[in-house]
Image 1 (cartoon, rainbow, N blue to C red):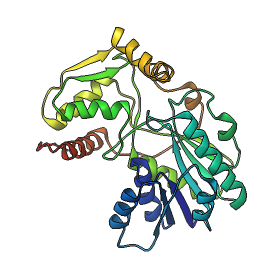
Image 2: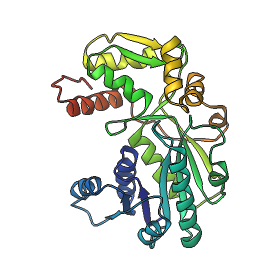
Image 3: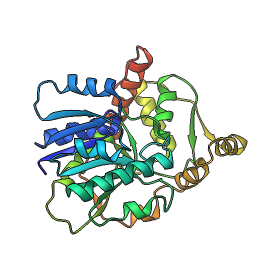
Length: 292
């Protein structure tokens, strides 16, 4: 793979992918609907000629096709955060699929393992696609995830609220590690395996994660589980939340566990959580002493 296009490039996972692909020697087209985010990327990578930016609508096939000239792979993430709209996700997938058919570019899909079962499976099951299922992501630029909400409350010094039984252990994957794994898999020439589960850190429970965060901020966070009427209210307010939360409460999905795993020893929770908390505190304007 010599040239790749990253959709939603200004988002947290998109930024991590761009960095990993450039580091691996690929040219990158960063595609986004936000001029502000593209300008920030141009400034961040002003010292390299490997980045080109393209402003457009990721659901517009013609705009994507124009930007995709000469690319070998198209990277797109879906349901990595919990603010996705299914109709928009489908439109993006249809546009990418259309461009892939006309250019021959491989599609690299990074999917959250808690995404709704069976949604858009007709578009995701194309054998030409490389599907990478990710445990819940966290990192300095990743937001709109449950773990980010938990860490943000700790950075604010507020009572932390978490979802699911305290005994259920889950893996969390640092975004930079996920991007590095995705870049390496996409650059493999073999197409024998078209779906992988990216390996996160060791499975830990919510209290264990909160304890790691507490050590970083040198405090003992107050934590309570969201349940009862508060959980039912959340499910009522967000019609799709019930399905996602039910899957989340059970831990890793069965379908994800059945896939071959990929990933070496990644960022420790201690380092990753400290870096994430430091960035959150910076955004909030808090002057905190985060201990790595």
